Image (cartoon, rainbow, N blue to C red; front, side, top):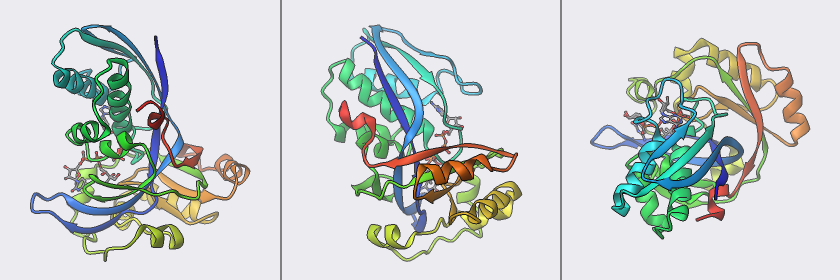
Amino acid sequence: MTLEILSPAKLNLNLHIIGQREDGYHLLESYFQLLNFGDHMGFEPQTSRIDISPEIPGVTPEENLIFRAAQLLKLTADDPQLGAKISLKKLLPMGGGLGGGSSNAATTLIALNALWQLNLSIDELATMGLSLGADVPFFVRGHSAWVEGIGERITPYPSNCHWYVVLRPRVSVSTAAIFSHPELTRDTPSSTVAAVLRQGGRNDCEPVVRSLYAEIDRTIDWLNKFSPARLTGTGACVFAAFKSKQDAEAVFRRRPDNCDGFVAQGINDSPVAQIS
Ligand SMILES: C[C@](O)(CO)[C@H](O)COP(=O)(O)OP(=O)(O)OC[C@H]1O[C@@H](n2ccc(N)nc2=O)[C@H](O)[C@@H]1O
Ligand SMILES: Nc1ncnc2c1ncn2[C@@H]1O[C@H](COP(=O)(O)OP(=O)(O)OP(=O)(O)O)[C@@H](O)[C@H]1O
């Protein structure tokens, strides 16, 4: 039996940095919007081996978050006979602020927990997920949500499910470099999810990212001509909301030559929420 499932992307509709922990990690407040666009994954049980195909260029099989998630689950179950053939059609740009790697890891935890009949709870899978990445618990829970702390405090909250143009300028942003930048705003006052969804929030990483990456700066300016544009995560992707699919597609067709990307709709529940 093969389980085929979409591993969705997210957008950070806002990203407020309200403080910093002693270990250097930043305390965030962010609305995480799930999208109906992502990577396609397939899972088929087999004996003992965990095989992922095709490989991701530039990521060794052992570093692949899909492999690490499967291995973690296998160790927790303490059963060396567990294995799976996992297929991946990667459509999400890597290092784009869309959470692709974290989403793949979460989808793997949920799918294999079901296929291997381990009966681990969502709380247990979310705790395991946090050791793989700050955004993994959000994707494990599988609902658009207000996220606090470094990603571990998650309150599901429905959005208006707008259509989005997502543009990817062809540059790569180092998350660690942005978070360690001296100019980064780290004292935004605490807000509420209702205020952010009503007024639209801002991304505190955006001024620093714009100053360091001219292509991202230009892309935000271009998209701003049609609808208020913002960075997701620490970039490099930039997005704006539209009332209809047609409006979004019309803007996407006119995108600058240096960008690829996609049009997608916000969703409140991830496909993984149906199998967990
Ligand atoms: C900010 C977000 O993009 C929001 O979606 C994510 O939480 C970032 O998650 P990520 O890309 O998985 O990043 P991680 O691999 O966990 O962290 C990369 C680096 O960014 C910094 N970092 C990350 C998240 C955070 N809340 N505070 C930080 O200071 C840390 O220096 C860390 O070493
Ligand atoms: N299955 C995977 N898919 C994508 N990236 C992976 C995967 N496994 C490991 N990685 C590594 O993780 C890095 C970050 O990838 P990802 O797509 O999650 O970035 P992101 O969209 O910037 O995430 P975030 O929004 O959490 O900052 C990649 O550059 C890659 O080296």
